Length: 225
Image (cartoon, rainbow, N blue to C red; front, side, top):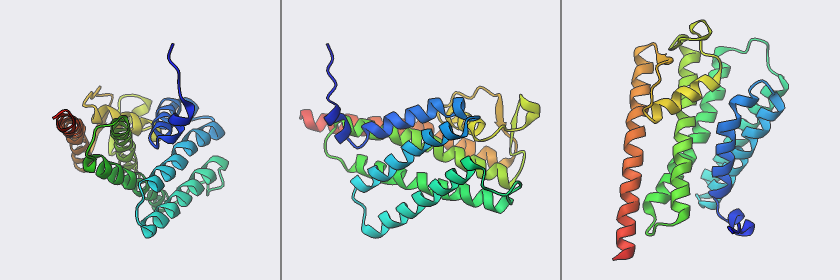
């Protein structure tokens, strides 16, 4: 019988984050039309990201800036949930909010990757951190696509819904199919810049697992040696 040590599970900074991100990834599309449920599902990973950044021990100034980004992101999510926004918010306002979220996701990608590749030993924590980075990269690119679609409408085309992108969930779907180089073809970039972004993500989708696995094998070889 497998016993789960909940105290040890809670101590590991990546356990809770990975679980929360998987729940958000799976539950996000299902709760898209339920504002409160959607808010809660994305709130938990947001708070855990702040916890992880704190555990990585960046300098005080960096952490304060990140905490400010987290507060801004949380406020935007809350206002969106309660629909306390203009009926037709400006393009610049929407793009700015997406840019804040973009930076919020980009900081942990950098810091977690840095910790992984500076590690001298292979641990379960190392592997879970690498998986978290992979999920964060997919979400980062989805928000980058969202900014592109806001600034240049019809940057992405879809074979359903009259050829229009139906919210962020479509772009998250497109991001992960591109990151994993699956490419079903039901959503495609429609401008030169969008194509460049998609190509760049697919390159990262191939290179990151390759480099990450090579790093794990190298560290494991040193441990055994």
